[in-house]
Length: 335
Ligand code: SAM
Ligand code: SF4
Image (cartoon, rainbow, N blue to C red; front, side, top):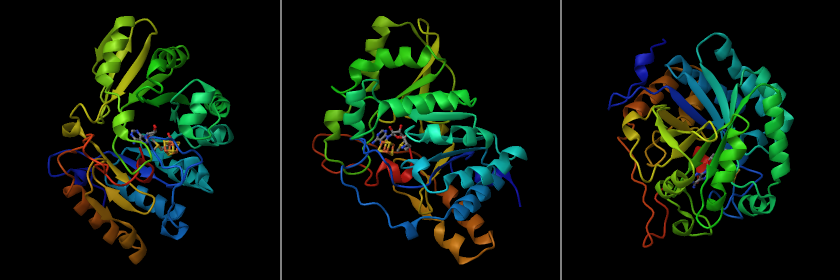
């Protein structure tokens, strides 16, 4: 039975946004996201594309209006287009407002037209540097030209592209002005992200961490930044940049509290539902999916999970702390 009010958590927040990681694998190894040598999950652990459709559809029946497909790199999952094709029925019948994805862009060129024909209107592409050499270093092997070509193809297919950049101290923090010009001159939003302490990596995140309050202060010397009230229910806050005429977002989970308006939950590729990016509270949805073809078990597991959504996160990056606040990598939960 469809009832949007079902997905209201214990703090009165309406859950209308589901992010789904469809794979933990990736063809890049960004230094802040993954270790160089990662052990990925055995394929049998993953939800099949059919199971992913089933669980997404269960959330949509309960009031989720926006779905973001992510990963790992979503476009490396075999036959991923079939998932977009099947989910697009919810756009056509009006149950879903938006079907979108976050990608590293390396395979966007191959999929852009088909994604657009599935009703994908917007795509987030991660670019941490416009310098091909630095891009290759940060991603441990990525090719910037291929990503730029993917963006061009997505735009040619009618999709709006937003650029995501993780700001890394002494790495790409000198490039933010270039990235603003690159994005805004072509009508794209740019969102800057602070490094989050998720998963073990080789580097110390204290060395990577750059508070966006510092970035903003520096930008304010060069640009006229005007706060705009756009809210997504997530950790992004936006400004309008007068000189470039575009929108700039700041995702600052470490320096701001955004939890009171949180409207989202995250599903991993193994069917674990995380109610908060920064907490370990999780509920297994794979068992109810596999136990029965009837969605009754699944629906009640989803309802119970939402009721347990924690009030907020407690990320912390400190010198003394050797283990990350959250042990799973972002690539498992999906950024
Ligand atoms: N592979 C795709 C990509 O890179 O866009 C989608 C998945 S990726 C995990 C989603 C977003 O999370 C990317 O913008 C990435 O830069 C960001 N990200 C990954 N690890 C992060 C971390 N530890 N802190 C902050 N952002 C992170
Ligand atoms: Fe892959 Fe995205 Fe993580 Fe980079 S940020 S390693 S592209 S999942």
